[in-house]
Amino acid sequence: MNNVTYQPKTDILQRETGLELLLNVPGVRKEDLTIRLEKKKLIVSGKVQQPTLKGLKAEYPVGDYQRAFMVGEDFDAESIVATLENGVLRLKLPKNETALPVEIKVQ
Amino acid sequence: MFSNLNQMIDQWLAFEQKSQTATSEPWTFSTTRKTPKINLYEADDKVVLTAELPGLQKAEIDLKVQGNSLIISSTPAENEEKPETYIYRERGLTAFNREIKFGFDIDAEQVEAQFENGILTVTLLPVAAEQPKTIALS
Image 1 (cartoon, rainbow over the protein chains, first blue to last red):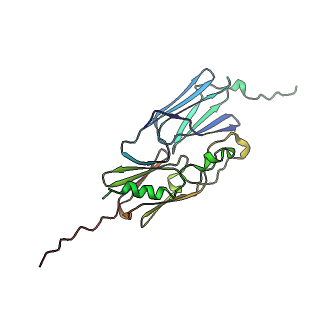
Image 2 (cartoon, each protein chain N blue to C red; image 1 turned 60 degrees about the vertical axis):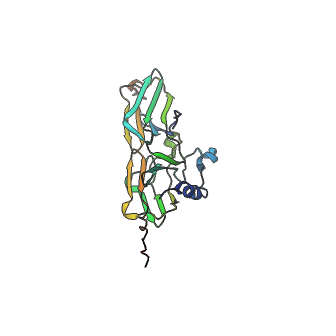
Image 3 (cartoon, each protein chain N blue to C red; image 1 turned 90 degrees about the vertical axis):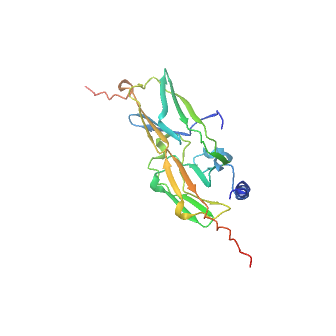
């Protein structure tokens, strides 16, 4: 239909161990998702299969998704956990251990 | 059979709100979606309806067929997240109930529905029309 890329609607949640991102990416299959961490930029892209049937009416557009997030240096690319369920991508970004608050005992 | 299908769909869509309410209320952060948007496709003698329902569970979606109307409704489970957990919020799930009227009676026996990757796909067939009768001249 078109080559427009859409920004998925996103929630960002604060967790004790870091951040959690929830992205609405309906129509994207697991194998069509790419998540990259480039320096401080987290880029999520998802490809959507265009319908092959003849369209009669369209209320919502069908297109690929992409969205970039600036993240601090407190996150490791290796420790990011991504799960896809019912069109929602859940990204767990645990903070580096060095970035977590440390409790200091009084001598 | 479908020569005037487009026209019929135009007719019923004329009564539907085409734009999403979320865009008309930007100050609400678009977290509510009162009615899901739908797309319609044609395949042979079938009509295929799709709707984006990300975040819903299969069991939370209810489909009903009655005469010429298809009713999609959902009452999503309560959000367990505390409001203070959110740093940024755009997504949202609310209960909805949307009735889509077609220009033909839907064959309830032949409705197929799937929910995959957050997309609901419903395939509808009209009730088979009666065959024209040949009347022999006496």
